[in-house]
Amino acid sequence: MVTMTPLEEELSRLAGSVPDPELPVLTLEELGVLRGVEVLGPGKVKVQLTPTYTGCPAIEAMSSDIERVLHEHGIPEVSVVTVLSPAWSTDDISDEGRRKLDEFGIAPPRRQEQGGPVPVSLAIRCPHCGSTDTELLSRFSSTACKSLRRCASCREPFDHFKEL
Image 1 (cartoon, rainbow, N blue to C red):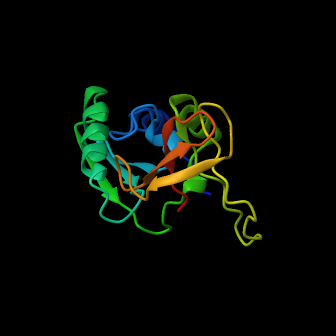
Image 2 (image 1 turned 30 degrees about the vertical axis):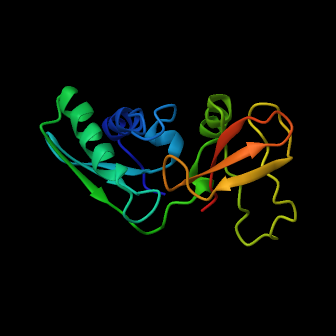
């Protein structure tokens, strides 16, 4: 594990506090896409960011928002680089991020245990009433990383953040 300086920790906190442009209820830190912040010299910082999937259109907005926040805090030269390996996974979403998704009405993704057994239950829990009696309406919702589902119990539609 790389040890960060206090300045890098502070800049990481600032960059990580940027809201996701497609899911503003989550910060980039909670989403798990912020991979690192490195001070390269006086006033010069490199931020590593991993998209949720290759070709994600939000990566440009994320980069621009990170640059803006760090410029506002006195860093004149900010470069945001896209890091594709290791690939982002829904397991990178923090517990707080999962809680916020559920509270916002989006079913959070199930955790994928690395090297573990495939879950037997494929049920998606309704974020409104908690029922697992849900049905898929569309494989894609407002963004490619979400599907549209409906609860058979409360009849409410909801987004499900797909597992990756």
